[in-house]
Length: 481
Image (tube, rainbow, N blue to C red):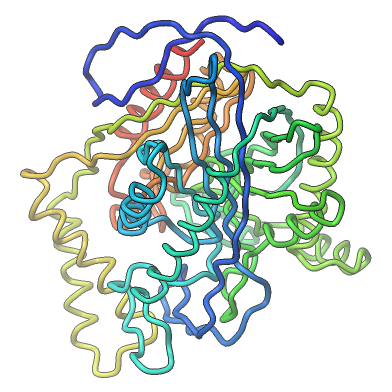
């Protein structure tokens, strides 16, 4: 067994409270893994666009995959985590609460606060929040009906993974694949536009950089066979986002290609900090399309090809360094972040948009969602003095040399780079869209540039809160080393 340095043991604490924690040593790792189909069997409203889309079929199945982790010393549990990745657009608070309520009854020896639910952010999955759309009542599975179905499936998944845990191992590694691209084009006047054209004479640059690193975790049974892989990519899975068919996007192709080689492998797709990233190319589009044609691959298959070749190589390399006795600690914290202030001018402009949409004699397919989008800003302006903060659930996990830190935002890339750059961990997995849905979290320069994803309608928390999230995440990570 390998020996490891001591680390701070986990706790659940409110931010700003002081703490003094005892040290803990490496412990025997127990692992369980499972996967389940979460595809609805009826037409559903699809999440991810302003206009209403009713699914007309299924391109490929939606999946959820889970890894259950527990460390033990002398057969006594030390810490635990249940990590679930879902082919969904977002994780709503209602989904998380319902699942935790079920697991509290189902798994008596599991602390439901240690559940981490993450969405891959496919834009061709069912709507969970019915307030955004006027969904037909006939012939369509309602969000509440799908939610019940989903909770049943995720309960089954979590139970199978948790009850199936056995002594196992973990390895970690780093690879590189071009998947995400910055999608905010900046122009000569300083304005920025998501997916803005680059052939304009005043096009200057892209607002921020890209991160092509692939952070990877592999989980092994006692015969050193891989049973699960968690892959952290700084890009949401929205290559086919505009379709009217159910589709798990590029994660489906990643799973298919990996499962063809590693039978029974459960694949967890973890989106990294990528609020300003996308798999869509902003230039070189024709050249890329030509290469896809020559390879006889679709866009999602091409992305999967890049990811899978790295995963296969790194998996085989790290097979040489499987750890069965590791330090693990799972910290959970309710973090207070200041809400982004809505100015009187922004509130007035939003109200004007709401009024204009209400006056339209024939509403368009996107008008209801746009009206909700603007109305929420008006409501925030009215309540922001009494409700100045947003409470988000923050998870930080140390597993061997790796740190995993989560947030519920579409977090702009720069925040993720700040966390990774300051982290003491050998590798740091920044996982967004976890344990809630809190909108975009733009940087200061993005707010200055404006445009969708950076305007007040797009974000509940602004750059001030983003830096607090970074600082607290780094503080906890580094306390564990």
